[in-house]
Image 1 (spheres, rainbow, N blue to C red):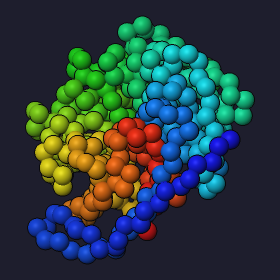
Image 2: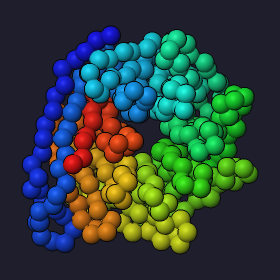
Image 3: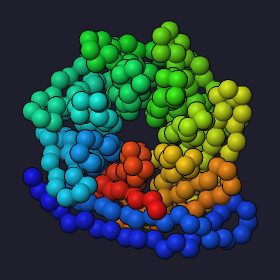
Image 4: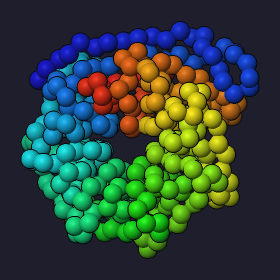
Length: 332
């Protein structure tokens, strides 16, 4: 195993707040930690939290999965079957890492204890590019298939895969999350729609967003089952209440070309996301109660944060695809 130096940056406590037209002070402080991935040009695409306080990542460019021990800084990387091109990943309850073999039309499972990989091929060859996976509370693995235009589920006990097409053609299903009731929600990136799927019947419901130019790229779900999305094309943060179908939008601090991308929520109700269209990329915090923004430049530059997850202790985990780094943001 290899240990690489940790870089850390502490951001001052006094930062601008956007939303009420005035700069204010706020008591949120963050520390950025980042680690350089051992294999050059790995293009770490997505992050995930794993057992033992580890940050896992998909090395899409190196055809590896990797992990870094966030306490010691030690890395371990795992070679994958040729041509898998890993994209999204998530850990199961037993510590296995499930990932979308984006270039191989499959879902796969890595056992970190043995390095063995089990592969589950898509039942339809049109589902050639599985994208983002997420576990529901009952252990079902749900996933999006972007260009193939499917929502899928995999039963880990049997390996059975079921696929369902959205109502909208060529919709590019992208990010996916599961709410507190076990219902998966996803964004349809080529449309102005958010979707959900019934876990039993596989029936899909689509929720049109008011602006026809909206293009939701990633989503997050808060403790009240409100859907938050990054409108990549227009430079907005959006809020969808699936019960009332009401939508509210907030212009991102970086402006119309800020390209909001990876997004997550934390237990205090805050919404966190990254602006990928500004240099350096930014980390943005939105307070839904005060309707105010707080933002920080990412010290390493960012290199496009395509996905963001919240660790059990509230830390934010990020992958910096363009600069071959992964990172952690500690919130104080």
